[in-house]
Amino acid sequence: MTKETQLQVEAIKNGSVIDHIPANVGIKVLKLFKMDSTNQRVTVGLNLPSSALGAKDLIKVENTFISEEQANQLALYAPKATVNQIENYEVVKKLTLSLPEHIRGVFKCPNTNCITHGEPVDSSFTVRAKQDDVQLKCKYCEKVFSREIVTECN
Ligand code: CTP
Ligand code: ZN
Image 1: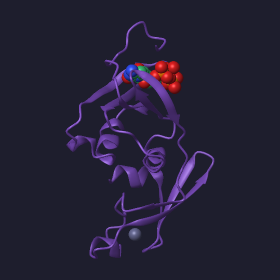
Image 2: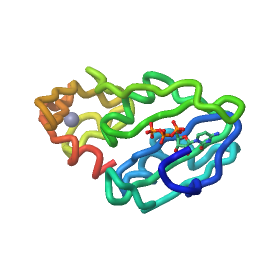
Image 3: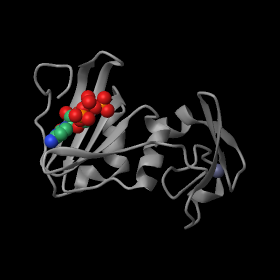
Image 4: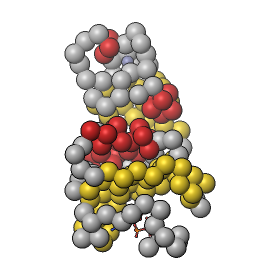
């Protein structure tokens, strides 16, 4: 159980819990994992009180397991999020998030003149991290964008 006396969102039997998502990022994470169009039960908590973050978003999805690769994509939006795998009501695994070196086919390039917008090619970025500052370089137009710019326009 959490430090709170009661769970803020009902416990799940099998599936994934993505916790400690910064407030206002939860909806983007839902879309990133296409959980806005799944048939599985998804419960979402937005702006929940959190001692560590002040306010946080939380996503619980039944019968769906977040892969290592997906967890790395999540690292771009929410580096401090935790991904828990639940089996028969128990937390059986916590995935650690690490930034991927490359991200393909997930984010569109913020440069509106980039060739990726007019051609049927997947976007592709190289990820560079210096301390908390994360930058993405487009493989096609070679422009460099901050993490915030890329996630905001996607
Ligand atoms: N959880 C859930 N359903 C379960 C078990 C756990 O929804 N059957 C949720 C908890 O509410 C919590 C997350 O999964 O949001 C992780 O559970 P747990 O590790 O027990 O909580 P904490 O110790 O608070 O984990 P952390 O500090 O890693 O966030
Ligand atoms: Zn580009």
